Image 1 (tube, rainbow, N blue to C red):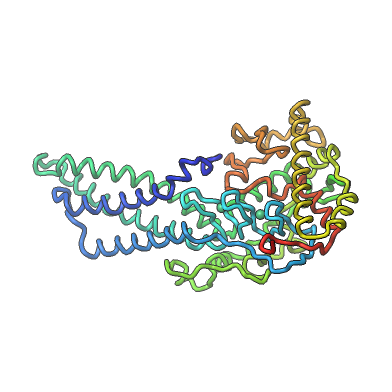
Image 2: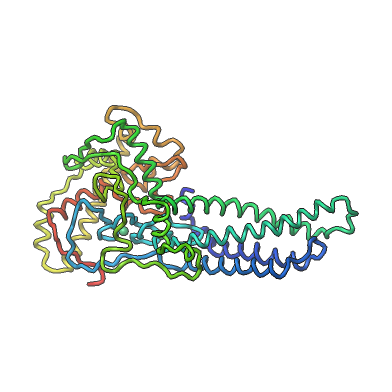
Length: 448
Ligand SMILES: [Zn+2]
Ligand SMILES: [Zn+2]
């Protein structure tokens, strides 16, 4: 999967390719069934034809909506933001990152309840697009099962007539056509069946692909630590606590399913014309707040702290500790918006330079292996089991050594911009700066 959706070829041909595949399986097969009269039992009945084409119509509608629906965008109304460092912050959007949102590097923004960026629809599966995506998968599978029934009928007739003289049987052309359609049908059915099963599971558990990955990582960390909680020292010497927490958004199967589809009426869940969910525009409610199951000692604890990241940040930052006081003085001296923007860009640039220096340092002295050591000197090989080639030293990743799950996936593979993920190593200076400037004026691009 790694980098699959990054390939320019895949990006260009995925959607037309899916359309061609649907057209081939649905219409070429019908042409053959209706016109290759030597293929028993002949053309499908009128009812069979109507049912199959109705399913196909639903499939086209839901696919179109999955591809074209905007995955959602956060609009921040407040010009003055209460900066809260206990909350997540996206440095790419330069804005708070609401719970369950992630910054998608394809959509180039924080996507509400991001599941993954799907190469086959060239779109994010998000809070907004998930219902369309699920309906598309359901109708795709129903259509495939219907086609499978047609194919099975024809193979059954061939088997029944196996003792008949060949000249009475189907032509060579129709046999080849039947074989090709069956082969394409089989591969497509297996792939889409797996996708549907995974999506149904994540729907029922209210767990996005990204959250499934976070859960795996959290379990590995907790298991390795062998305790339910322990303290970690952060980059600025402050203590942070790792504690084992429960995934909070699973509020019961029916409630999970209703929440995802935006209605508790199951009759509407498969409606191809259902209206698209909307992100609330007043900064709370739909897309901003998520009901929790109350298993943790307080709300808002997800995603769990990654002690590896904190430890890495603590080791790396002394090399490039910022002078916050000086920066804050500079902020005070910035008279107008333009100055502030300019200064913000400069700080970003400085951040980047510092990061480059750290990477260079690490590469020079070959400290990557050292960074992979636990506090107690134990190597954490087990976390990279199943990892593929580029999981540790990829130069584009900078100082982070991304964790890979048992499928060999890292967040990057779901379309997440790892650089904008809650990298404590990245966020500490900015968060710290902002904490000291609590209530700092935030000017978004629309004001410029
Ligand atoms: Zn973002
Ligand atoms: Zn995306």
